[in-house]
Image 1 (cartoon, helix red, strand yellow):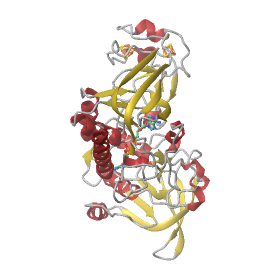
Image 2: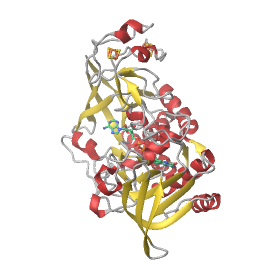
Image 3: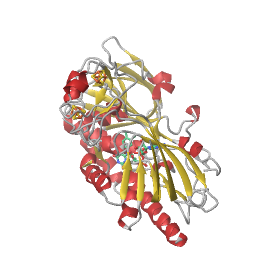
Image 4: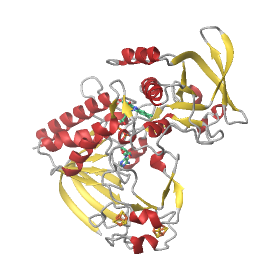
Length: 431
Ligand SMILES: Cc1cc2nc3c(=O)[nH]c(=O)nc-3n(C[C@H](O)[C@H](O)[C@H](O)COP(=O)(O)OP(=O)(O)OC[C@H]3O[C@@H](n4cnc5c(N)ncnc54)[C@H](O)[C@@H]3O)c2cc1C
Ligand code: SF4
Ligand code: SF4
């Protein structure tokens, strides 16, 4: 099915906090927005977080009202499971865009989100929204606070047994759905495609993927979140509640050997946040944080770091050289203790890798007759960073949030506000 629409002012690509914020600001000004998201739910990484530094506000409580407002705003049309195939800038200055909307195999308006289908599906695969800590079914709702809260079928793993179809009380399962091609014309585009997480499998000596009790900070976010997979903090190998937890800062950041020489801006603070939450959840646990330098540069950040220290977090200035595993699943860190000038070892029952942020530049490939330039680290280039931080190398295309560089949520919201304001100025000058 092909739908031809010409009545959007702005196409926003990516519905994380940056895309939502730009969409809401522009929609409130009266512009008509098409917001697309490649995942089955909007909300980006933020909707999956536990609490946020430095206030320790619940991430879901802040983000879900914004997510609902985005989904319901009369000037915002939202398409999930949708990606851009191509963007062509016409001589008129308008952008001609081809979108691909992947099938859910569920009739969206009929699904009530009851999850009856999940109870009968025989397929069990790793749950990507819980960062592989637990499993999900082939028919599933991504997570409790997903928006839209509608099931989808992971057709690659589905056995086509039909059990969900028989069980669904709303007859919402529809295996005949096909990929849709949608063609639109818009006056401007905002890139809000966010960041990718560094995959620590590339740092072999930390043992991620080999030792079960080495996890990432995003997995720990899920363990601490209100929509968490377990009702406690557990280590993966044997389900034990850990009592000696280590963090390794700068995993995949400030490291030329993995091709990412820059600071990821958020890892010192999110690790400090997690340490505080862990000390609350497990009052008897020892938390050690191995760092190169503490970068607590933002408003309230240094106080937040001092608070973690006062609560008993043990900050160790030292570069971890290797992690090895003992028979009982515990892990031994070998590190250079900068304060004493000695090489030391310490044993922990859970190790959390504070993984860095990487650029997500794939979107540049969809521009067919103009070049959306990137900077040397593959983030979207801001040619006039000081005077027009949301402008890109293509007139009429703007950028918001971590698509430009690593940043935290407050900076992402400010960047998205700048993108909305620059876009509205551009649109007004067109009319
Ligand atoms: C472990 C961890 C903990 C953190 N804790 C905190 C914290 O406590 N406080 C804080 O301030 N910050 C924290 N952050 C940082 C925070 O996650 C980011 O600042 C924020 O998520 C950036 O939002 P964004 O919208 O720019 O990007 P994202 O959240 O990455 O959203 C981008 C969206 O675009 C979609 N997308 C990507 N490509 C396409 C495409 N081609 N087509 C359509 N859609 C696409 C993605 O699916 C995603 O939904 C943390 C980060 C991590 C990794
Ligand atoms: S597809 Fe049917 S059974 Fe599954 S959540 Fe939706 S309404 Fe419930
Ligand atoms: S048809 Fe597919 S999704 Fe439905 S129950 Fe069977 S395996 Fe699961």
